[in-house]
Image (tube, rainbow over all chains, first blue to last red; front, side):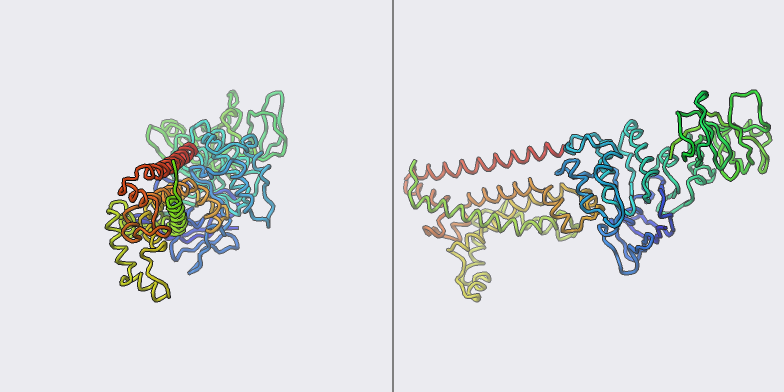
Length: 358
Length: 227
């Protein structure tokens, strides 16, 4: 399962150059500064931009090669744009029906009813599109894309035109889609929170070229990549719930980095979750402390120390097989004499762990 | 108010002309307006200027050139003769051809504006929902451009109703064949028969007013739906 690209596209002064292979079965996030060519790249994949000589293939389907070019409506790529792009001459239900009537029947897919339930728009089906708020309209656009049963879903900054409140409302729907549907997604965003919550794989771009392409867990915590320098930089791991103690409201998680204790609402054993830890919520000690409120101590090895402005440094750690990123003061790093290869303990407050069931 | 049989005949002829011209112009202008609304081609501005000429030219000038073009010695007149017919001047066919030119911009411009206003986003959304080009035309473009089509039809129709100069130059004033309402009015005034002129003029005024009122209503509802 993979998306193979060899794209060279000239638009005025701007050149997009991408020669790479991406996983074709998971959520690949594409990030980078405005004007770096993210949109042009996905538009070329969807067939909305065309340049001779490009090569695009998705799993077993060749979409462009040599003289062959498959028009967008035959690619089975559904696209959600920054603006909802609903058809204003149709009401909400007829917008969904538009996608559903043209769906791919060869694979199982969502019905209009199921998609409306998933995005909680069932109550709006009879409404006209111009009566919807920005967030509601975008949920309808996402549902419309899902019912067309696409082989690949492209979302081009679907939340960027929305206010903060609407974003926070839609993100859980996107997480739900990501974990409940086996649907490959290309997701453009430059919001760190969206990347950390949704991405399985991240592609970083700049000036029309690809800077990095790697699993999200690695890119998010790699000080060499820009995302680790972000104020809210965070490490993610996948974990499984081992047990839940109702008295203390703490669940025990098994992750690649070791066992973690996390305050949480009641949750079933065996559920897979994505845990996110902000770099500034991880502190470092040389010994396992006894009389502390901190519950999580992960044995870890120092991989690198990177100085950053503001008297701070990023310490890249490895706990088990998982990377961890800690942001501490440069003064503390010197006091502890941190160096590459040193065995330390990463301390994480339970309350600092951000969970997301999946 | 009394409408004589000759005046009724003039009115019927005017309506027949307006219907023919509106239908033919919609067929001609739809593809051209679509192309003009999408192309970046440099000859676009030339075509736009040419098609707007009837807006500024005196109808007599337009009529004069059409007379030369369609007369027995003009290229179009000769073509008709070669095909086994008569030159279209001073006949209904001539009126239709002349009016096509005369009313052209009144149909083309509303259509072009309507197509431009759709933008590329709904079409791209439709394409990524597996709608092919023809499917997109019928399921997205035509419904979204509906107010534009109504405006274009009404403007083309109403403008053809009021035609005078071009008709006079290429059609003369033959009762039952080329005497349209506006020319009949002119005749009545020449003969100082103001009553009959009033009747015909009043009918044209009311029809034009109702049509334009309809266009405004349509545009208002369309605008409300857009916002």
